Amino acid sequence: MTNLSKANIALTCAALALALALAGMPAGAQVTTTPSPPMTGGAAQPADPGTELLRTATVRLTRGDYDTELSRLPEDTRGGFGTNIDRINTLLRVMLVDKSLAHEARDAGLDKDPEIARIISAETDRILSKALMDRNQAQWEKEANARPNLDQAARERWLSQPDKFRKGDEMKLQQIFYAFPKHSVADAKSLAQAARAKIAAGASMDDIAKAESDDAASAQNGGHVDWRAARDMDPQLARVAFGLRKPGDLSRPIETESGIYLVRLDAKRVGDVRAYEDVKASILADLRREYVDAKRAQRMAAIRNDPAIVVNQPAVNALVVRIDPEILKKATETPAVPGGKSKRVAPAAN
Image (tube, rainbow, N blue to C red; front, side, top):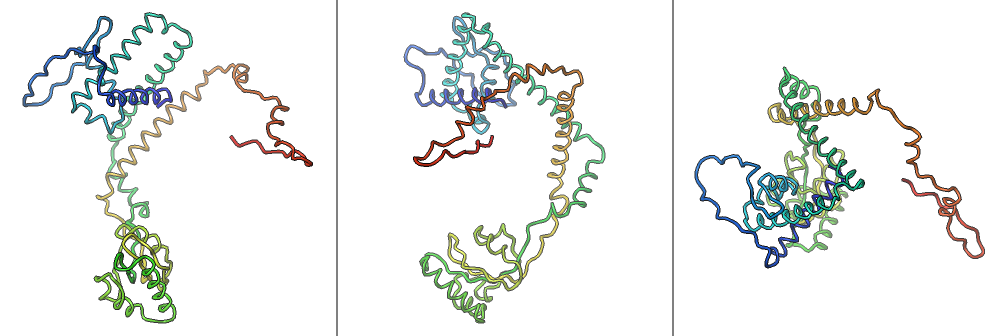
């Protein structure tokens, strides 16, 4: 999306937000409305974009104008926007102001101003370019989905890249847990450090876990925990535990939101490869995206490398902003220190 398009969206959203905050137009700027027809059962009929929503002596707003304006709003707010008549009326008033001012601008001939006309032309080019590429992408996606033996290609990728489709690594560990708020943070750390020192000196971690650990499920088993993946653990605990390299490695005390852990690695294994049916949809999506990306790259390359391109090199060279070396030299020197010399400063990297 172009910077100008982003600016337009930002201005539209800002105007709408302001209008919502001000809760409507000043007195005297009322819009005459007619009651909505009662809701009926059955499927909704497609809206006619030419349906008139409101008009003044100079402009009219249609359903198509409204739908176009909605498409410029952030996607996460677009879906529920039409559930509130006040929001709809406010947006229509914002649109009415824009359309009326634009009508006045055309009457004043501003659209014929060379600079403004260039901006309008450039924005039109960007809109048409995006519309064409959106249509091309839809066609390329259809082509990608219609390719023969697509399921076979997906299965071959699953077989040839097993590491990409593995579950996370798993580990067996032994742990001692000092819970909050049973212990203060300082006391829990102190207990964990004392336990670590005892274990390092040869004491049984099983015995300490049974006597001190606040994790009842593992304490009765000497602190031993069966195979677990990182996603099943507290993030802080998993980060340290999965950093242990070999069986017998003992961690430092690990602070989490629920308490302090002390863990020792018993065993670690690489996760199993996920079943093909579990990853098939994501592989097919990757294949479709790769096909579309390749088609887009080919289309762009054909334009960029068109042998019929004629470059006015002198005019292109004239676009370069040339700086007087003496001015650049002065700009990269710091003021002289009394009794010293000026220091050269390297130009900032672009």
